[in-house]
Amino acid sequence: MFSPDKKKQKNSSMEATTQQNIIAQGTKIVGDIASQGPFRIDGTVEGNVKTSGKVVVGKSGYIKGTLQGENADFEGKFSGKLILSGTLTLKSTAHIEGEVHITKLAVEPGATFNATCSMKGTVKSLSNEASRPQQAQSAQGK
Image (cartoon, rainbow, N blue to C red):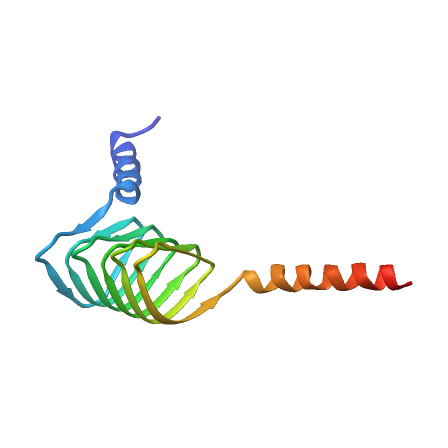
């Protein structure tokens, strides 16, 4: 009913999405990278990185260019445009410069964050909370 070839293809595609891509310290990549899986970068990347997985940049890691992904943890450096649908976490050794578009931001003391930052998703909750006190005040004034 099931051929062994189909099972093998299914397992290899599942492994590809769960395995972490690693760019080791001392490695420099110039160009664009696209992946479905998570990344750990301890080397240097000059170009565009696009992934649906999490990106971790170690202390010796450096990205110069555009990073698009879901979540990212930085201990190293970034310069360019950062676009995340989830959370950007900056450890104390992180150094971020450029343009940042995120949903959530977590910063440890000591991190350097010199960027233009826009946070999507928070505007709605702030406007809803701002309208509630006005409604309460108008109810009290009646």
